Picture 1 (cartoon, helix red, strand yellow):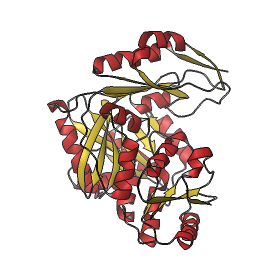
Picture 2 (cartoon, one colour):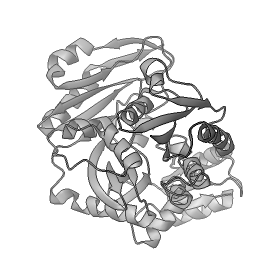
Picture 3 (cartoon, rainbow, N blue to C red):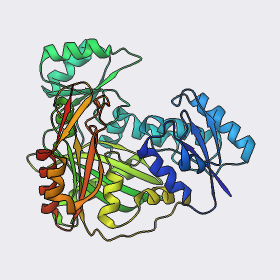
Picture 4 (spheres, rainbow, N blue to C red):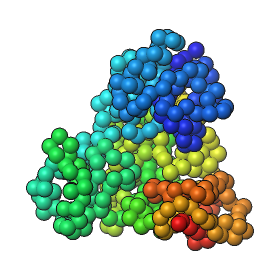
Length: 404
């Protein structure tokens, strides 16, 4: 029996789908490291678990893993899907002599400044950037690239704690908020203009065995800045054409440059107005925003299991035919407070119900989410990409979420 430690601090549905995939593997004993344990049948998937108070503290995690090792013997893998713990997982793997991405590789994927330094060293296009430790650093960077710029934590994820800065006054305000210091810099980046996409891979033994891509409609930073926008992700059915060839080459080259051996990756990239490409950032983990689910629906395959097979078995069960276009519309609306109403659901069902694969409606009484993924979603699928695009438009034009 192979002992697999799964670090899953909180029982979010997105995390539990990966736990269930681990539970479907042969010859695996799942050992949980949790802050809040799952309930019901999900809890039963854990042969044993240890509580941690601070899931970001590698010492706390290490004590939990040590306890599990004493109880069950040597470990086969230590894994987890959350972006903020990827370096800590690598540190645990090195300490307990467990295979998987090492600390250097994990730090390159996690620290966006070091990542971009490495990508530039390999001649790969990405936004110009600088670590900002003072007002003088910020002024010098603006003089170099001009406005707008983006400020974010070096180890950020998605668009959380991210500012688009367009004036000197906005720059002063943002720097007063983040208080950069020599020991705690913030990251400044050139603002990339153009259409934004993602690029996902399954990599085994340093070889990319599978790739997919999606369109962001509109870019997530636009959604973060405009609370009324209902964001969409679209996976077109056909990604084999020449219009995506440069993106495929870029994605594969990025993984080689950063040295990932085995795992999932999720890269955000831009196509500028002149047609050129630029990398936003890349993470060595499964994508969020329901992209794993969407990828599975596009290929009639279980991509949660594909992740488990990659990180536990070093195996890939594909290739799979891309049979469908899929998309997800995230539900939210203007205003603040708690969800008090949802309009248009029945009308949307009448218009595009035959395309709907999964729905999570906002919960009445729940506080409005601060995420661009909103308070609910609708997933659709069809053989025709244009049909999926039209369905996504119908959803965001028909369904309205109200707050008070």
